[in-house]
Length: 179
Image (cartoon, rainbow, N blue to C red):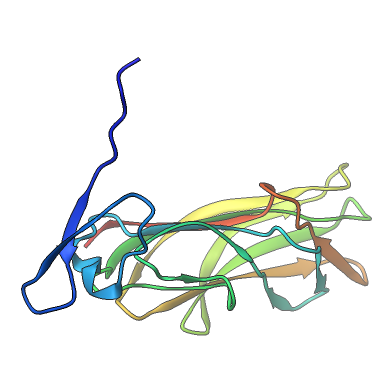
């Protein structure tokens, strides 16, 4: 098998016109973002299950940053802010496993931009399973500085349900596809 060599990214350092090399694993400063071709992130829910109430949108939290090219994801707020130079078409997606007590339980995933819903990402219906998945993707235009969050809307006969916090089962991601 051929040896895999780390790639270096050259971007703007700190001073005007100053170039700096970034090694794999380096956190890129915002001023380097215009040089990043594909800003992207992935975040996971690896914490306690999150309760969501019936008939209302609930912001879903993702406390682990799996990767973040461009530095836009904030695990403390579970929000992604489109970095400078990151405007254009973006693909956002999510997958959530949730508890169900009835075959009529449904959960829709909603993408919010700057505090307002801009679309539905996906949908999950319990059917005959007790831990169904709601998942999907969508493409939306964003400008630098726009904030993106994931909400879930629960429709059940009564009560609340839980979004599971197990590693690798509940995820939110996004990547820029073009200007």
